[in-house]
Amino acid sequence: MRNVILMTLVLFITQSTFAQVTHEIFESFKLQERRNVSYYFPEDYTPEKKYPLIVVLDAEYLFDQVVANAKFYSRFEGMPQVIIVGIDQSKDDLRWDDCAFEEASGLPAEKGKSFYEFIGMEIVPYLDLTYSTAPFRMFIGYDITANFGNYFLFKDRSFFNAFISIAPHLAPEMEIRVPERLMAMEQQIFYHLIAGGGKPATGNEIKLLDQNLRKVDKPSIHYSFDAYPESNEVSVVTYGLGKAWEKMFEVFKPISPKQYREEILTSDEPAFKYLEDKYNTIEELFGFRKSVSLNDIMAIYAATRKKDDFESLKPLSDLCKKEYPETMLGFFFEGEYYEQLGEAKKALRTFEKAFGMQEIDFLTKELALEKIDAIKADFGY
Image (cartoon, rainbow, N blue to C red; front, side, top):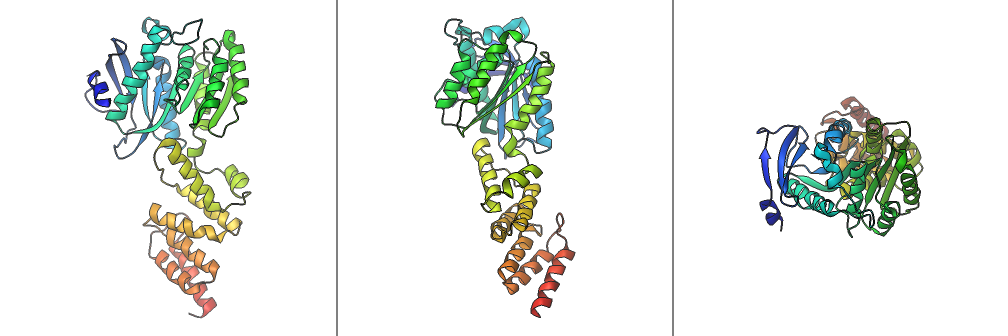
């Protein structure tokens, strides 16, 4: 099936060299027309990694801002690196044809059905086959194009895992249908609704949609809402996207001081389980295993000391040997584990191994030597 889809795609490359952003004319079999499409790839893109995919409509208006936010947040570990595809829709008001809906039914009009297939059967499959994409996909739209994203929820399994809906121009009954669909779905869905943009005519529908979405009480549905009543159609995007990234990728970010205080220290479970659950969730959501950050390791280490949870030191040390094999982390934490168990000989040998490895963070050879000397003094070695 995928090979058949590929044969229907003809791409005219306007830039011959690989760059962060490329622009193409995509000849669509589904639409029977040629469309301007833009792609963003991380500078250090490599097929060895997996990249979530973001589809952006109204690309002339939204693409650059989405790219800027993605670059900023991924640089500081606020989100994974992503591939972004933007579809131009401003010329000849294509957006209103692409995303048109029937007033009676609220469902896509004839051109809208073809545009739905253009995204789901041409654009995304092309990127999945050509580049190293992860299973996690996000949809971003504004006004009429934001409403169009909701139609991907009408399947048993949504084509997208995350939606940023900016000041949507809602089709009839969408404020009821979207919550109903989310309530019926079994997969993890992130849905961020943004109100504002100088569109008071749609304010009541958005307010009702927000009220109904707040009633969707399912662990797999992650809903958030922001309102910018004083914003215009430009500033609502600037305000809204940054806040949306914060909420969409909360689990991907390093452990914060607040999480450390309010979630890790107050939990009755072992500190290491928090770290394990966090990275398992990231893998489940985004489809790839994220390397464990030094920040997170040190947060869990601090928690083991604060909670007298020395049993967490052993799995933490095993993890560090895999993630930071050239450094002292793994053997130092293992040495402390044996020290807490009262196994002095094992602790001594382990700290000696740590002494011979690279220093990292606060772990220095001097500190390892202090541990070694203290054990020798206490036990007369």
